[in-house]
Length: 614
Image (cartoon, rainbow, N blue to C red; front, top):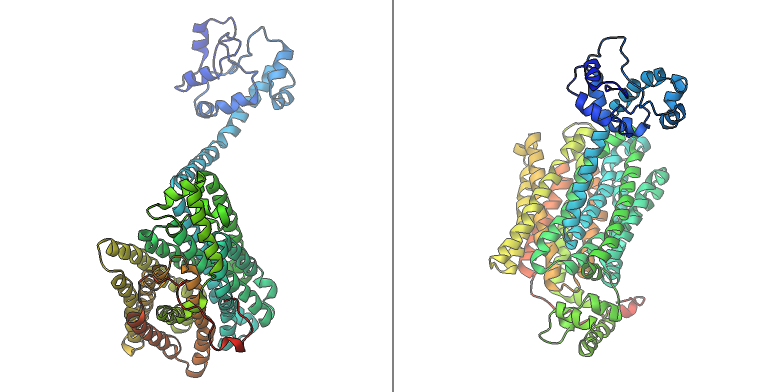
């Protein structure tokens, strides 16, 4: 640093100083606080941190002639005690107390050390700015979109925890000596829990709301996933662990449909459902990318530990979002929370619970203001809901719901069998290792994301343009079933099967286009009854979970018997989708149904069974 000592002429100080373009900045920073204009060398370490940009540049400049002191003591009026109190302790130790030499020796070294830390400081600042931008973007979103994003994230983690077994089963089978049939049993164990909990999850979501049931499900399946390495030494123990994963994931579809019906207007529901369920494809991609890497570096056990930890992290984020929403957007928060009595009336005033001509918004304001007429209407509606439990028998008797059950079965046979066996299929057919097989299996989920992005908005746009709702739903489902069936049958021919690239393209296209079910099958429950959409989905998904048990095991058995992937994997899927397309087109109706007024009487066979909570 350069400057004049107290009492030195300014001209002499300027002549003695080195010629450097950084000198003005350095001189300003080093001006003594006592007002004498001399360099403040006795100041504390915080000054050194403040002058790092100028000091680092000054160190690169050529020093002036030797023999001239580079640094001058601060003003002559400062006593040795004053200087010792303001000096850094490291200077006092190295410089021998109050001497100038110690400070002269220490200052350049200290500035160099601080300057070396400058890039990291800038990187930290840029990282903080990026975090602030993401936070500002998140805060600017409407509350219902935050619900959609985090729900889609839960679906992403769900499929990561589902697909991890299809990747890890290959090294696990080698370690434990499993045959394809045993591997099929292990992979199908997930669906035992998934099947058993479908109806209860629909009832629980309808009773307590998806906001409550989704975090419960995520917590359960994440803990069960992380516990797989502890139970994998025996097939029964491993099957129990995977069944618990399925038990938790069974809550996700009904919970998601319930939340969409609560927070999204009808004209946005196709897009919302498509976006949320697209998280399944993202989860497949992330699982197939990271799973083989984790297995190669840390062993197959790491896949379950890491993926389970992600679910627990999601749980913290979701609860934080809901807690903040309670303060920032009480209306949406209340719509997500299942409450009863008068509390429910202030938050979830449905159109059919209000006097004629009164909107839901006006009704909520009237309830808040204590309008006795509105309170009486809403309380009667709440009491009626308690008198009318979920009409499960009416669902089963309805021909459209029956058609949806079979359509869901056909849809899931294709998805579950392909999801479970695709890495093994590519390893066997293309003769590649696990890493390359998993990378090849990435292509169908990527195509599924693209199809999901097109299915929902195109369906909503068609409805906005005046296209009849039944035509929109049926067209979407025909695309999802007929085109993939034709592609799979083409893949069974020698002309396609003998060309690996063409075969991979066919599988990718068929799985991608099947995502149009999100604008057909998965939206029909809301068309029939927004009130009971989650309960109906749990019913149809119960039937749809059967292929996870029967289909996955059947593929393994058929391959053991025939040694033909076409016979075991492709032809059964094409057959179910063709019949499912016919049933959906002919039987399904899309008009709203008043299931509370429908026949919900006990079936004739019920007296022969234990009493059911229906």
